[in-house]
Amino acid sequence: MPKPKSKYLKPFKNIYVIVLLGFAIWMLFFDAHSWLFHHELNTEINELEYQKQHYKNEMAKDNKAIKELSTEEGVERMARETYYMKKPNEEIYIIEYEDSIAKENQDE
Image 1: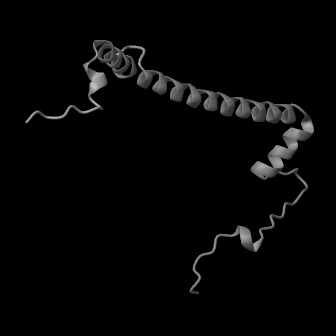
Image 2: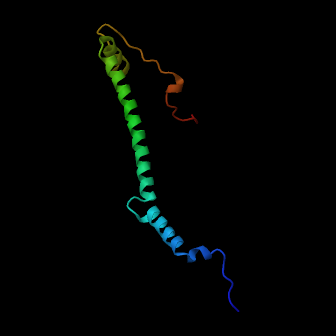
Image 3: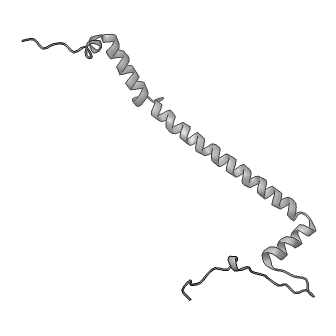
């Protein structure tokens, strides 16, 4: 008894469909300009664009800090706040709030 032919395999007997399918598979996966290669490059481009934006933001913050430190008042404020420097006849009191102090043990 002859085996019935499948209607799904019929298009694959055409030489043009086989060549077109082979070409599509070659271009998507194996060629130097494949879809996978372009996907990796696009991912890398997106990552580099993110880094570029991050560094531009950092440069803007640094330029703002440089602008603040270019004045005498800015240098004095930075020295007082960061390094706790003071003038010769001056006293500094550092106030720490409870929520800023690290809690040692809850049990005690």
